[in-house]
Image (cartoon, rainbow, N blue to C red):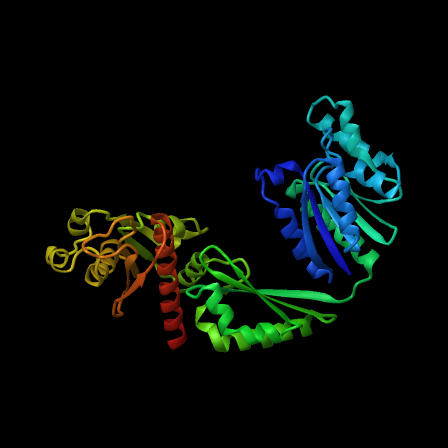
Length: 417
């Protein structure tokens, strides 16, 4: 059983909003054992929508629409579908009562066009809208299943979870479950990762392995199908073990986690605190770590030491170090990390110094970056990386690399204990 998702709304095509509904529905349909092969976005135009429906019918048994169920003239989804499949729109009294009660509760006058939202395809099963006005609906006819859902995610998501998914399960009778797992990588590019596991990708039919590029990191989505969820999980375990044998050192987490979430979790677990001294990154590390909920338990504060005067006078980097090796150096990065740790009395200090661009500094080329890591009671380490990209990209990637190196270091310590 395969499905297609059609998102209706010119605002999507104009880039005014992002089509998060398609992602959500694809994830939910996978759990029902329904494959999604196509996502379509079409504007508020009945002719183009009708054309999109015809194409969808030629390749998909289930067609799910989001958007276009509101009260205005450009909300034309159900009208277009009704004409296309040759059915009528009828008033649903329960939906109309819900809409009328909404206006009474909010002390607003209900205009006549709001009655339009209570119209449903004749013979369809109504999906109540517990968080808005326009109901959804599902209709099986002519060998296809048509499901209509509202566009706002706050209305669509609970409607599908509470009502739509159950209707689809009944109508399709699909028993096979699809179970997915996302592996998150950093420090290896998509092309390099694919090269390392190309034979695994080529050989796998069930589970399947799909590499996807992200913002600075790479993900692999593993997907298995089986009637027994536990057996599907075991299939994923087996293929993940093969991948870990090849590139396990680059895996830092699962699903929708981030490097900084993983780092924060390790620090909270060990009850360790951290501070940072940032030159080229200008406080980006501090910004990322403090965006994590509960960061106050692990982060005391930090210093943006952009000038050599601040490095020397505030973070106490030796003048001799700056004169002999320069601010963009392993020696400076080490002193910054160690000294800021002492100043703030934390368990860990991390530092960033380098050349973001666009011009070289101290004879060092753009993209030369040193990341210092100091851990109380342990020898300090400095990682040197060479990045290529814009000034902004170099700064952002430097912060992510710093988080990755520190996370890897702390996990290695955990494994050694």
